Length: 282
Ligand code: MG
Image 1 (cartoon, rainbow, N blue to C red):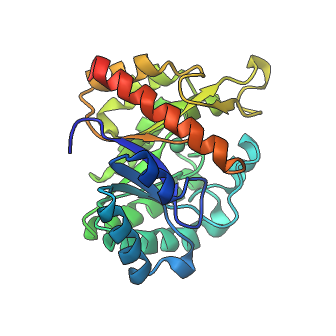
Image 2: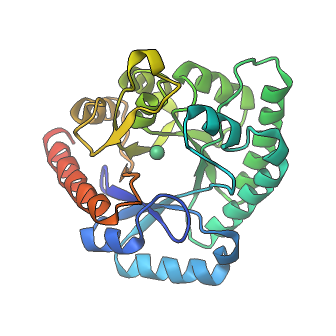
């Protein structure tokens, strides 16, 4: 693949992504997809989706898992409900993530990804150790499928993410870097964070956001905005990725599924912005 193929975050029937027709209309060469619901996570459905992608010249670069019961209402609710961190659902969700990894093999894709949740801060605590165990077990399954697992950033600081990846001690755990999430969750300046975790970054989101007011940062969301209109600094972001030697896809995310027309228009603008910056930097 060329350097920095532009991509779009898509969904089949679950998650916040746009439907594949938007990627087809925009003529982008790559997509990440949010895994479909369990009922449609079949070999037949994968074959149909893959066929459409092939016809449109689109490569699937990652499949994201997500789970029933997750809520991103505010940072505290996310911490309580997202990923493999909540204890009550941990085993069931880990099993589901293995199924998603199996489904992904039908899509000919070697990357699965997820929001693992807010990694507990205490590295000696039972919650942290439990999360390590379940992550290792998942990674071993993912590896048997010839895949790597990418963790979406944002819910912890870059330093803590480095601790966690190091403590897991597996060679197929990497990072899907989302610069806007660092701002939205208030977990750190994105460019500095990118430099810290850069050696682990194997996929990225191109998404933008504005910081919440300082007194409520981390308690209330920042605001997700169209690419180029937020506090990330897209040119600096791409220059930093270039310095790190990152040549993988630039996958656009715009999380306003409630307004599909605006979502599509904003993604169209984002494609053009990335093409301009790529011509200038890449
Ligand atoms: Mg993201």
